Length: 284
Ligand SMILES: [Zn+2]
Image (tube, rainbow, N blue to C red; front, top):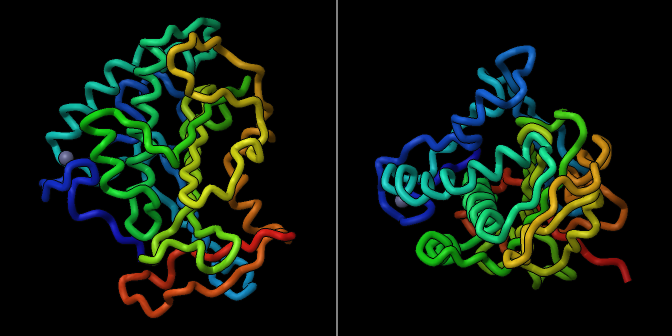
């Protein structure tokens, strides 16, 4: 079962926790409307010892994907600094998601980066069993806008809106041997992909330093360096390339290059045994 946080993931307050729209409300009016106001959630689970993925579970949900909310933050964070991040990034986001040719100057690029980091940290912390980033890193971001060192974010765009309102997330433990796994049973690698209009975002939290972002493919632009202007749009990624970016971690885990090993601390009672997990052994 998925376990949602009981405290605000950014300040630790017991709440009450509020529902934060992952795609801001102002975006709902400009994003393409899907044919039906419903979406599905699909959850795949891997278990150790060379076993392939179990059949994935698919659940039909009410409402378009871009109306989903996460119940992980308190009202003070939601209506305070997070809403401020969103306001500052909105003018840049409007241009990027419509593919309007423009140059994003450093202050706009900084605002965009801050908003993207807040969203990625929120997505990483959505379920406790998949969270890679520590609480300290989220606090550092909230109070000092410090970008966590294990986090990399790149953005791209497609000529179509095929990925508008889509969301892909894969969490696992990757290591060259079983001792590379975090000692507390946490995962160390999380890929997060989401789309808005023609813009898509790919983030990788690589706690073990095992994965190269270049393996994702596509024509992606790093959100850093923040002191340089950002020319938009970059070369278009095809829908197939964008899909490859979204699924790159999953594809690696399913490939023959990965050996699955049992979790080293399977006796840890706090570890959810049904959660996606596995260890990668790098081929020599
Ligand atoms: Zn809070």
